[in-house]
Amino acid sequence: MLFTVCGEKPGDCIMAGKPKLHYFNARGRMESIRWLLAAAGVEFEEQFLQSPEDLEKLRNDGSLMFQQVPMVEIDGMKLAQTRAILNYIAAKYNLYGKDIKERALIDMYSEGMADLNEMILHLPLCPPDQKDAKMTQIREKTTNRYFPAFEKVLKSHGQHYLVGNRLSRADIHLVELIYYVEEIDPSLLANFPLLKALKTRISNLPPVKKFLQPGSQRKPPIDAKALEEARKIFKF
Image (cartoon, rainbow, N blue to C red):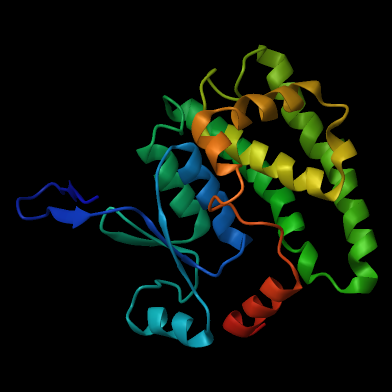
């Protein structure tokens, strides 16, 4: 379904439809964007890159500001850079706090989550002889640094959500991260009851529950085939 988006000046109105996500058919840096849109109850389309030529076409037609994906077409814009995209979606769908102080907390928490997520994101690229050490590092950082920090936040105010007792992008990013950590080692959440409760709470929200069902646009862990496809497209 199409709807109208208008700017400040007459004639600035354009027709816009569902957000369109440009990436390859895997998690990567697009998955947090998929999670956030899904949690906001926003339907979106995906245009998968299947060859180096697909990527080159986007570059040549000026769609990629920095010559790279993720890129999301939304509200008449072609947004690049994952954090910029997430910020826009969060602000648009009221998932970014009620004031500048809450937004600062949401940003701080989200950046901490991104640090751990980055380690997990690079795990499939790790040489086989280094994988065990990397997994040990992820376990250590999870249980000694990141999960204790967020457990402490929830305990400090006794509320259902991380910031302002209302759902924000920080809650969604954290639950997404918890799912990734549990894929590595399900026992890592055992000593964090408030994080367990948050995971259950967010997972039972109707749009998130739908996203977690088989057949949704949520992507599985990257496998050898998807990794090879990424190498072919991005030439790394």
